[in-house]
Image 1 (cartoon, helix red, strand yellow):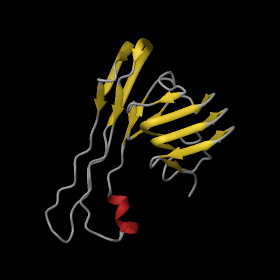
Image 2: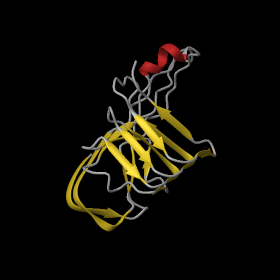
Image 3: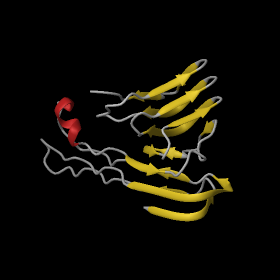
Image 4: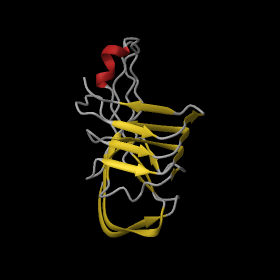
Length: 178
C-alpha cells in the first residue's frame, strides 16, 4: 500500500492494513508456513489536526506442526513494514492500536520523547542503528516495543532516564548483532 498525499489525517476508526495470510493446514503431520505482513508507505507533507488512523501489517497465523521451532522459525512469515517520512505520528502516548504488528522505518535513525506510555499498541523500530531516548519513564501496558532487526549488525539502543514498567503481558525486544 503506497499512499502519497499533502495532508494525512483520520480518526481511530480508520485502519490501513496489509495482512498476511494464514498457513494452510493440509497434512496432519506437517502444516505450512504463513504469509508475512505486507508493506505500507504513507508519504505525507503534513498532518491534519486529527491524525489517529491506525496501521497494521500482521503476519498470518502459522500452522506448523513441529515441536522443533529452532529449525522452523526461519520459514514463518514475519510482520510487515511501515515507512513514514518523519516521526510526527509518534508522541508521548501511543495507544488504541495506532500501530499494530508493524516494523516502522523513518529517514532518521533516532527518536526522543520526554516520557512514553504505550497501551494496546505494538511496533518495532526497524532501522539498523536506531536509538530511542525516553528522558523520564516508560510504561508498556499490553504493548510490544522492539528495536533493530533479527539479523541486525549495527548497535541499537533504548535509553530510559527513569523507570521502565511493563504490565499486562507487555514485551520488549532488542535485536542487535549476530
